[in-house]
Image (cartoon, rainbow, N blue to C red; front, side, top):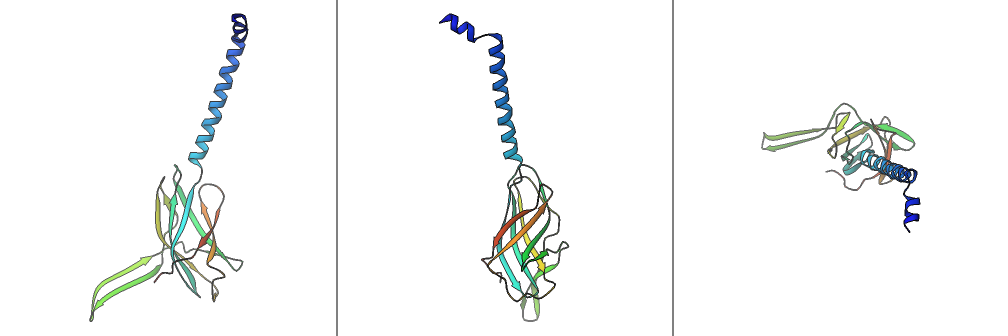
Amino acid sequence: MTELLSNLLTRENITLALSIFGSIGTVITWLVSFMKNRRKFSIIVNGYRFDSRGLLLYVQIINRSYLSLSVSDVSIKLYDQTIYTDKIPVKVLETTIRKGFEIIEHKADYSMPFPVQLSPLGGCSGYLNFSFEKDIPQLPSNTVTAVIHSNRGLPYRKKLKLENPLN
């Protein structure tokens, strides 16, 4: 028994076991680093408004990765057309509350400015305004395909459900 043990515990076998153990540790570290630092984000539509001149989406963009993310552009596909969001903020909603002839409150909402900077494990919400060049009478369905361009990797495609119309 001791002879078998002494044959197995040679300098070469111990070196081999340590190198295998180190290689397994390195591979595990690479996998954990990849899973932790890969691009993980989601976009959720909280509301929408459609008319023949454009589509307005109220969205949440959430960064679920441990690295910051910059969303540089968002586009949608409608009727084989790619429509990009307005990069410069435009007034999308306006609300005025009056009491008689007196204005009590006036509120204006603007679309998101681009690029959108997302901190690690953070998010933001705002309006995305898509202006149509030609009038589009109706949406083809209650989903649109969005293409999100960011500073990390290839453009991300996602089908967005349009469920809650904005008032």
